[in-house]
Image (cartoon, rainbow over all chains, first blue to last red; front, side, top):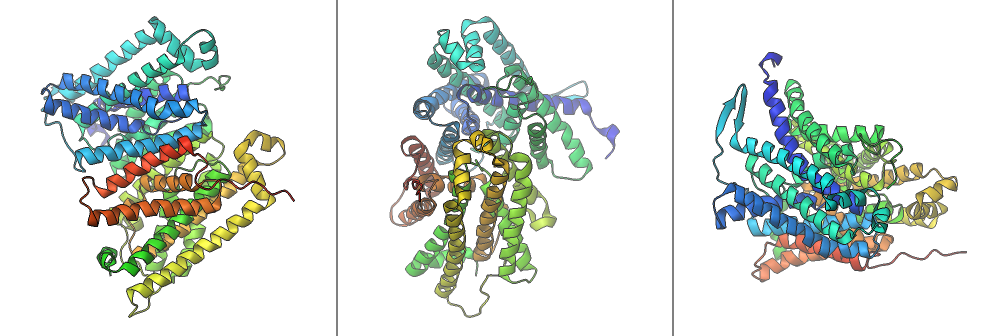
Length: 300
Length: 309
């Protein structure tokens, strides 16, 4: 393969799209992980749920993609709240160990995924929307890709405002930093947790819609992203939201640039998942508490 | 004869159906036992069980396809899975338990993707076919074939069951429980907990490898689709339901879950179910998993209290 023939700008742009979807998918997981101290394995199913919610909205309500994104956000957000109230809240109230919560989330994930298989069938669906393709300089783009990147940028900006400027956002950060201290200061943990599950699951829902728009809708849509999402979470060190956003784009870019390497060595491009996994292993061995975490800040 | 053709016969032949069910129960009992020693006794969160199951199946298949006896294949499968378990656990064992769960899950998926994409290792997505049976006798009736297989798998199960019983009753087993309860405390007592965990992970992987080896010769083919992460989850639910900290519980769990699986398959033939039996099984599995963790985390059979001489 000739290196000069590779359109690096295009690959960079593709990396940004992948990174945007990863950021949407990973943020909610990192929020709930830092507040309840367990990796919610059923988080992957929220992505698929969002994708199907948008599909239903396109089919039943109105053929409007923007509306369907909002509906996916809201309905997946409520699914998140529902999951918390039905499964995870009773468990953490009982004082279950994080180990038990992880296993329960695994069971809940199975339940969600196979319910989706039951309702929507095994065959992959598509949105049947036409996204216009055009050139910006040397880069080939579609309107969907522009939408993905713009939405993610706006959401990053809104989240930043929310976390830094509003009282609830500050309470959220305090809670994820030091739960007991935050509760002593009079922060209502339950209210914040409900909000966190709503936002986290909702963002995953949007991520699912974008992913499905780019590929197809299947119940294992979210599960396919599980390895990169967990790599991002561990790379970002779970608690630091800005680090999560940064590592989402880092993993997205690395994955897309790794495709060049894979084609040079004549390997299947499916291996880009493995690259994310190798990064995960290297980080865990070198820096067991995440790349952006300061050495002294290890306590839970 | 193809396994699917045999399945057709099975519906007609009740004895064969029962024998086949017993074989699957014994097979999953081995897997569930191996998870029980890892998770229930030592507290290792192994979410990559399907990986070692797969390695055992593939190694045994490759060995027997090269014309060697099945029992050599079984030996190779056990040794090779143990080796992979050892190598993979050394760098991973020191990370936190939730990270360990994530890493094993990801490792299992990655190796599966490699096997699926590399045709030269073991046929890629098609897998390996026509794997010779452990009992290559001609003119063997199907029932007799099943009985021989049942004896073989029960032999393997009994072998591992007795080894685990010995481990648990020994001082070594008490150290494992101490690691599960409080790893730091055990370290203060002067035990190298990482070494113990690596040893147990290796034993667990060897057991899963043996189960995989049996599977490959019994159904006669292996492909990567048999070892999805849902396989790992099925083993987890068996372990949780039966009682993770009791070796009898692991077998009860396998019996229970296989009962549900077979039950839905029989039900499909008699009742017009509005729901796909495969989906139904997993939905029920998921609900049961949450239910047990919530109300009965110790499982059907509780952990035995330690006897003090």
